[in-house]
Length: 87
Length: 239
Image (cartoon, rainbow over all chains, first blue to last red; front, top):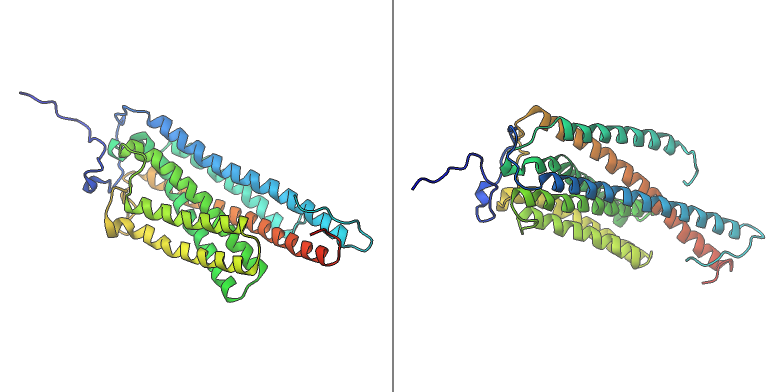
């Protein structure tokens, strides 16, 4: 019985830790059979979403804190109105 | 501190522009110039590597900032040291989330599963959880001296774990790739090495900017707390 031999190394399995990659080398084509492109795009969207979300939240909070500082400084100044409690 | 056009802003915004330009170049280079790696390494998904590894490095940097500032705070407490420690922990969590989010997507292609209790993955998760605990503690446990010191101690503890992550593969094996080594590494194409190098530069700049911006916010938060104390003491604010 003749068995077909794989032409490209298959992804390593968790049962074989010694088969982990020790180098990355360029190959032609790549022999993709599953959605590596989708995984790649998902990873980039996730990473940039995290950074942009973090920046947006920080920016909004910085704005609120600066307003709060102005309110408190105004209230503490002589004759200033009473400041409202924090939200 | 909160002035619109301070000297710091004159450095911050040009640095931000440079960082954005480098990231645009990096993304284009990774997608159009770096070759696809062998299927064993994830094929096309291996391109996650050029952001995944620099993000892990940025997490180390932010953790180191948190550790140093926390240790200095424990030695001699100041609002600025507390703010920088807090900012370091915040940014370490963000970069840690980037690492823990992108890694499983790459692993799905390279290993066939999203997650495995590989030594490096497990120690990374543990370290990020320590920094999450610092962030949660500072967000919900108040701004008292005891809470600050406890968070600072946790910040030092979280950073002590970082070298263990780095050497976990060497000490305990596992599936995680070991392409970056002292003997020159296993990136077998010049474009791969170039993309990784640019990735390190870009993430270093991003980490510096985020820690800087977050430190300013934490300092402003501390100022609000002090002003509120003054306002309550002088009857200008209801407790």
